[in-house]
Amino acid sequence: MHTLHKAQTILDQFVMASRRFGLSVSLKKTEVLFQPSPDNIYATPVVTIGNTALPVAGTFCYLGSRIHRTGSLDDEITARLAKATAAFGCLRNKSACGTTTEFEQILNSRVAIHESRSYIR
Image 1 (cartoon, one colour):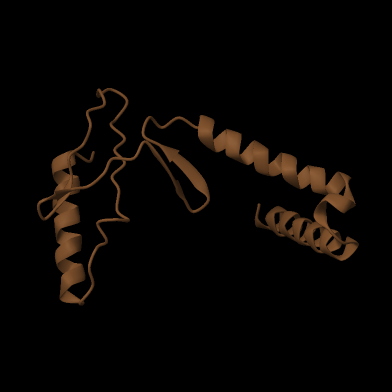
Image 2 (tube, rainbow, N blue to C red; image 1 turned 45 degrees about the vertical axis):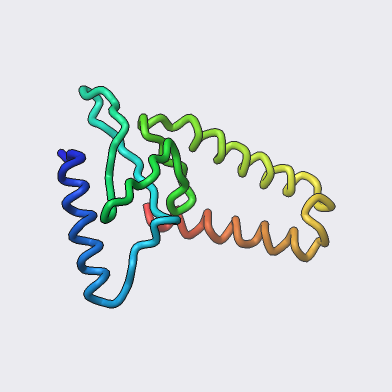
């Protein structure tokens, strides 16, 4: 189980390792998202780099998926449904995707992805 203290220790070690390689952690681009275990109450985390407290995020997008501090999948499901709706709308109406060539490319790539997934199982 991770605690805020452990998270701070790991971040401090990461910052030190980055500095050894001549790199720095961007304070403008770094945020904290804390997900407590289900039996713990959420407390706003305070994680710092040097003397600067990092901003706390409620959600963020990581590798195309939305992660929420509560562990809720509502944002993720909503985003995926919106993408699926747009994709199926494109498939129904070729003109919504532009030229027929673009439509065929989208359809062919989706078929290829589907076929590759069926071989993996």
